[in-house]
Every structure is written in C-alpha cells, then in structure tokens.
Length: 174
Image 1 (cartoon, rainbow, N blue to C red):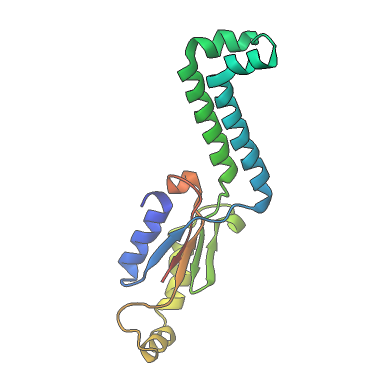
Image 2 (cartoon, helix red, strand yellow):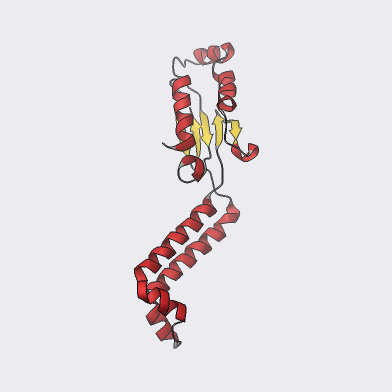
C-alpha cells in the first residue's frame, strides 16, 4: 500500500480497530475507451513498423522514409522501447480518473472528484466518528451482535496515480 490509500488504511486501523479497508480501481468513463483502444492500436502498429518495416515497405513497393532509415533501422531496440514507453504513458494517462472516493456502508464520506482535492484528516475523521463512535451507533452495533470489530461496510473509492503511486483507486472499508 502506497500513497493516500496507505494513509487512509493506517488511519482507520489506528483509530477504528477492526474496520476492514478494501481498495479497488475506480471505473474509467466509457467515453475514454475508444481513445484507449486507438492508443493501443497505434502503439502495436508502430512497434510492428519498427520490427518489420523493411518488409512492409518492400511489400508495398515504396522506399522506406528517411526518418525510418535514419532513426529506426540504426536502433531498432531503442525505437521499439521508445514506442512502448510512450504508448504506455499515453494509455495510463487516459485511464487516470483522478478519483479518490471514501465510502462507509455505501454512504459517501469524501469525494475528490467533487471537492477537487485530497481529503484532510478532518474530512475523514469527522464523518467516520459520527457514524462509528456515537452512542447510538455503538448501541446499534451491539444490538446487531457486532462486538469489538466495527462491522459495517465502508469504502475508499478512487485514487489517481499521483496519490496512489499507480492507477486510479476505489475501495471499501468494512
């Protein structure tokens, strides 16, 4: 666990022993999928040109372009590596939602998408204390047979690459 999710996990384990924290990736909006697929196609096509370009140009009956003979033929491995790296960079950024959403028992506690910032300690502790530590909440858990463990489901949903260390993140705390 890294980044913001790791901090939320540590906070919940310290302040609310027995609370289960589950992290998941936040869903990518459907409108981004065609762009991601196009980037994948372009990446694989350029890799094929880097590796098989001589045969492709010969089969098409056209001379290889100067950029190909000057930059690709002289360093195929570097060209393939560069295309692979650039393609993965583009696809990772297309998949980034910027989300870091925190839920408890299906109720939204904090939304980075709505607030435009990462949560502060008080953004999380205040609502979770109100849900978990009030006398009514403690009595309700006791009546439900939930002893020391806090029982209910809470969630952390959505973490972007800068905050999580990699990928978008969504999750649940129980």
